Length: 196
Image 1 (cartoon, rainbow, N blue to C red):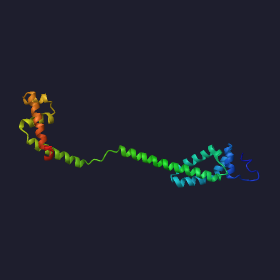
Image 2 (tube, rainbow, N blue to C red; image 1 turned 30 degrees about the vertical axis):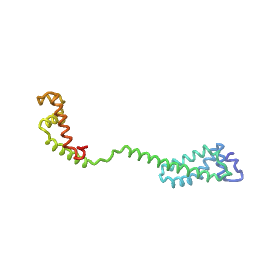
Image 3 (tube, rainbow, N blue to C red; image 1 turned 120 degrees about the vertical axis):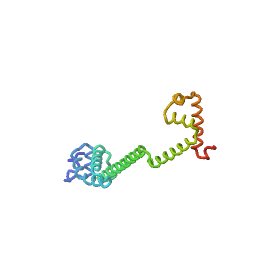
């Protein structure tokens, strides 16, 4: 059906006739249908989406779908305007859901990529307290144990280098380190843990 043959007696064909003609590929019928209904479709979509740019995109998608699927319109099931507005509302709601899902994914990715909050003040205080405990504990070691630990752990020397610097055999240095670490652990650990 073409626009000219829709209703020869009517000056203006109905929306239903225009969609039926559009299904047959009548571009003029589609243009007239678009001109009649675009403002109503845009108003509906704009109320759902609020964003003007997205509203224009959805209106364009709706009319593209009308052009491509006009053959699915059945005048027996309702008017062309109802069919069009249902399509517009569905597309607008789909766009809202898509935007919400996208935001949710972005938030989830942002939370996943976010570094955990650290309390630098508390961490610095804990390090200072631990440093003070170890320093006090070092005072409870014998001078040779303290020397062995200072040369290897704080001085950065290997056990062989520490033995050479202290002028003792390597086996003696290893024994002093082992005894010093055991004594240091007992002095630093809280009383309940040292017994366990």
